[in-house]
Length: 285
Image (cartoon, rainbow, N blue to C red):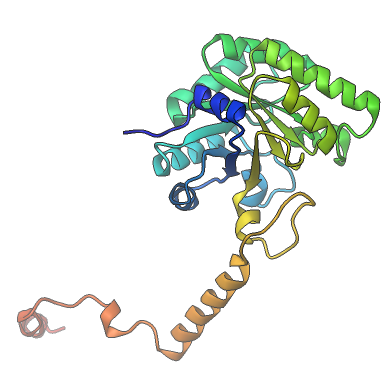
């Protein structure tokens, strides 16, 4: 039986005060670990362009790439609530493009929810996708897809006017049909106000502990990057150090002939080796 959290389950969690644990991951192997850890929600973020492919921004993530990795995560996590990130230019061109691409995530990749980075300009997109029967997580605050315009990112909602604008935008997004909100890099005080005002679950990415849930990227949580992450991230292990240690030991054992041992090898079936030798001899090999 599936125990996948649905939108009503997430709403119930909000109203009961139970925090929602979410994580971003991008591949089958990591997603299996996430499932075993009992995570509530997985977000397949376009940050994969940076953390998987080594790009300097999220912009090179394409729809086909996002469909491929979202499908991989779904295969590993068939019973986990799955959010797919709409990449750059997958929804900005037109409402029809937004509907087509959101539908691809549901039909081809098995996503339960699509995430869209939005400003007030995209209220009609949120409404159209929601009206089509697809649950939408509206992403406000720091929006990584806007890096080309902004040049660099800074915390959002840190002045009274910016805070009012963000709070009003959150209200309008929920009115337009957003089933969840994701606040990235928003001042804690403002995130708290938004969370208390809106009826839908609010997930924090660097927006403080007062939201209904949290999301971080798996490489930061696992300590895989070997460097300090963003201000709001926390590593719960040092798998970078452990991984380098294991890889170094493997390389050393290969060079010294310690690995592989006989137990790591396959063998010709019993009694067949003599036949093999005769066959080779008869062929002059």
